[in-house]
Length: 179
Image (cartoon, rainbow, N blue to C red):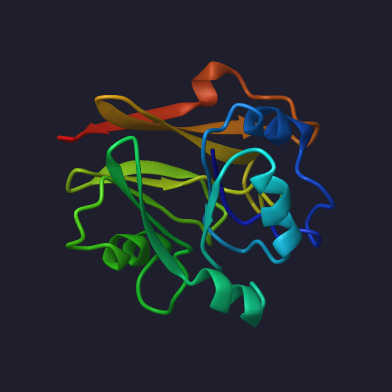
């Protein structure tokens, strides 16, 4: 499962029930920053191992503990995780630049709260949006990653009551790579 921009407890006191239900099936959890409280990571770790990076509004002690960039391997694929904040270019451009030349198959980023799923030069890019702060968006969201011979990703959209939007709202993309 992929999360970003939870902003807890300021934006929500707890994760939405539909997110908790999805966490129950997670084998690994990625959080792309703006967590704001270490207790959020403690809660996530009760479901599965967690890989997290700090975002621009995370407190200094969290930024020191987590760092702003991580590389991990899941299912034989290289995944880069960053928040995507900075001063030059768009959030997407900064996420791409963060892992340029590092041979990643997928880059997970956040910051904008705007869900994104696409490809750039054979690299899958995912911003899961936010499960607690949709800002100007129509709905809340989180991401899912699946690995087999390929790595694929989807974004799951839901409303303020936690009701999932129909399947046509789920956007899917995949990229194949040699393992």
